[in-house]
Length: 126
Image 1 (cartoon, rainbow, N blue to C red):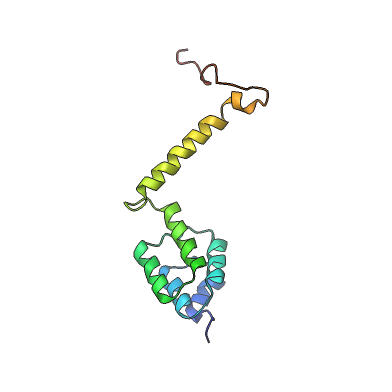
Image 2: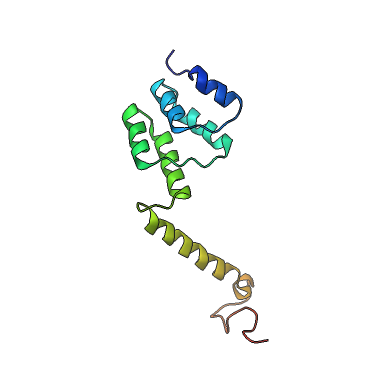
């Protein structure tokens, strides 16, 4: 029946286990909507790290954009490889700048306007 989950995958899902690539591909080939697959993948709270070749295989099997975007984003969030190393480094640097800005007490004071008079932190020599 089109749109139904194959029996072995259904058993895995009934016990709330994370899906392997073969499971996702099997559901795509059997016509399960991408939104339903993504909903289950989010519910497992497992990091899904599909390679770009696997994502391309899903596209060729007919996966919709909801599923492709979710597994593609997951690869960017959880993998550091040659493909996304630059983007990963940019995210890390951006997070460091944000933390240093918002953890500074001068910026937390709504009455303070202007440049920081000195760097906040423990003295260098005690």
